[in-house]
Every structure is written in structure tokens, then in C-alpha cells.
Image 1 (tube, helix red, strand yellow):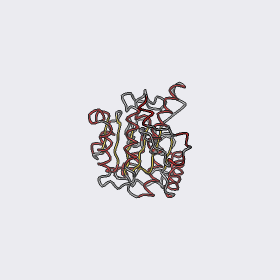
Image 2 (cartoon, protein in one colour):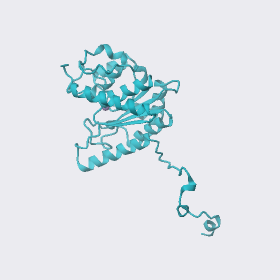
Image 3 (spheres, helix red, strand yellow):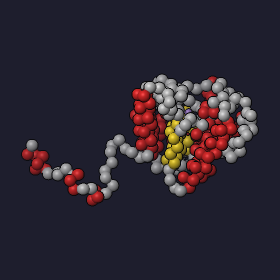
Image 4 (spheres, protein in one colour):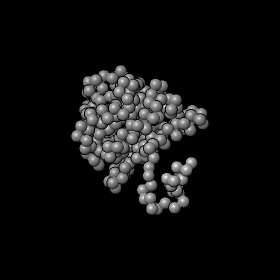
Length: 272
Ligand SMILES: [Mn+2]
């Protein structure tokens, strides 16, 4: 039994399965989307991604840093610890974790960037500063805009533009008005448009190979809260899958039935 880690046994076993599933999907050459569940999902998804691809770049989009250890956490919630479990520079800060032998922290902190932070515990702040972790809070989004922030983050974690990209998107990165049905909402967050833009920029790299969408909890809030949150999540997932708000031309125009084309006649337009 490890002190101050709630349900470690369950999470360790579950995340081993998540990791194995991610490995299976990525080995088939597919992009992997994981829908949470709480953010402890990231332990398994990122472990699997790193095992398949070696080095990866990780964007952690979240109101929180999820960087506690069992020694610093005030709650014992493992969903506040995944980044600290994944970062190899932090491995010395952990005791032996029974059931977690399958997971080795292999990801360098240099390959991790945060976007959307606005609720950071004091020990997390200390670790971010001590290890110079790339961390863009809401004040950076205000100063530079979300597209520039996303691209600055990508340049920091993948300076040679050649690493597979993993985006771990916590729905609470969005403002609580945009995504109320979540466990630890924080006001003053990203708009849905900004969340979509992060995903569009990530997709544009052509190296987005895994996405987590976590902390959507339909048990919380009113029916309207749930609907708004699910809609936001769908928009984020669609952007991660390459959907463009500009629209898409049909892939093969010849396949369309003839009547779907408006009859484009210059003279008809002119005669109006
Ligand atoms: Mn999180």
C-alpha cells in the first residue's frame, strides 16, 4: 500500500491495459484517440505511445499541471500526478509503486509543454521552475494568442519538427462556461475556439499520432451542462481528426450525384 495514492491498484491494472491497447493501435499505423475517464488515462496512453515510437513530443492541455507526487499531493488523487509519473527526470521522487512495474518513466521533461494552466499547486510551480518545463498559462494565451502559443510550445518540445506528437487534452482546460461537466472546473480558461485551434495546429504538423480527451464527466451538472460539455468535446475530437472549419471539398467530385451540383451559369447570375 502506497501512502496518499487513492486506488493505485485499480489504476495501475487499468492503465496497463490502456497502454497495451495504444501499442496495438499505433502498431497498426493508426492514430489513437483515447476518451477518458480521468487524466490518469495519460499514464497508459503516453506510456504506450513512447514504447512504440521512442521519443515523442507531448502537449498537455489542462487548467492543472498534474505534476504532484504522492508526497506533494493534497488529495491523493492520481489524476493529479500523471505528468510526474511519466517524466524520467522525476523518477527519483517516487517510492516503489506496486503494480506499476510495466511503466517506466521514459519521456524527458524537455519534450513536454503545457497550455492553459491557471490552477497550479506550489510544489508544482517549484518543479516547473526547477526543471524549466515549457508552460504556457492563460496569461500567455492573452499576450500572444493561442496559435502563437501552440506553435511556440511545439517548437520548444520538438525543435527539429520530427517527433510524433501526443496531445493530452483535459476538457477543464476550457473555461467552465464552455465545459461545465468536469470534476475540477476552473473559470478563466480557454474558449472552445481556442481549444479547437490547438487541435488544428497540432493536426497540421502531420505528426499527430495520439490524442487523449479526458475529464468529461456526464454525471456532473445539469442536462444542459452535460450537453454543452459533450458538444465541446466533439468539436475538439473533430479538429484532432482533421476536420476543418473552412469545410472540405468532396474527395472525388465525379462520385457525386449530378443534382448535387448547383448549375453554375454565368449568364444566369448576370441576368439577376
Ligand atoms: Mn488534467
